[in-house]
Length: 108
Image 1 (cartoon, rainbow, N blue to C red):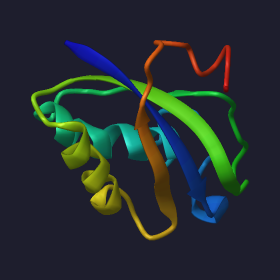
Image 2: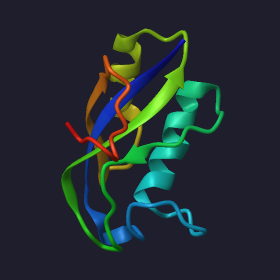
Image 3: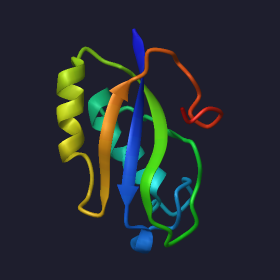
């Protein structure tokens, strides 16, 4: 069964080309997608962001979601967030969503 997870991200965007995936892989979305694929047997995961940022822009609480079909329990997935990303890009909240809302449409 697939679950939807909400993440809240903070980052220093100085070294990124904005949020949204592009041909150049150095975007926030591309880095998170690549890191989360580890939870999915290295199969692609695409996060959906509630908003986008331009190159060099920082964020303290950007919200996104992703769907994951896994045998891992929620505690293991939450613990993994500590190891996910580089020093300048952190997921500081990772929660399962009880209702599968689209974060881009409703960030609540």
